[in-house]
Image 1 (cartoon, rainbow, N blue to C red):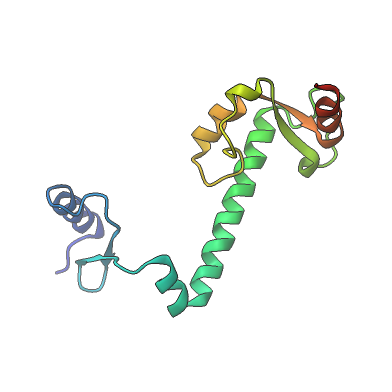
Image 2: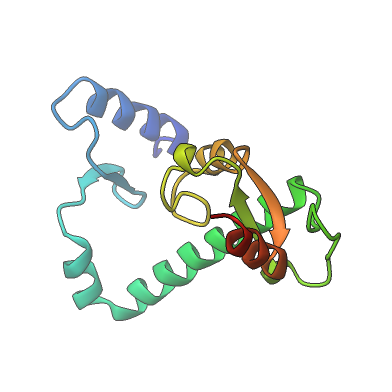
Length: 138
């Protein structure tokens, strides 16, 4: 009778944590219940299966879009200056203090929590108001 997937995962996690494999990518072959160390690079996986790379790129893009939408919703979903709310794509984050800006965090592959921390240093404005802010600021 085969082990449950949970029991196998716990065993693999214990084995990884107690060995020099900590931090490595480890997967489970559910057919034979053995752990497999992923040693191929991104380029090697992409070369072997181009559709895998396409799926991964789509997944990353979807996650980025979802995170940006969540942040914009959390900030009210409208321009804090003029109230524009017709199109989320036209809303942007403006850093109130440029010296506190951590470059290119919002909309990146950083965790949503890290993006929230960075967004809390900003106001949500529409693209038009954002351009006006930068043109008025010396």
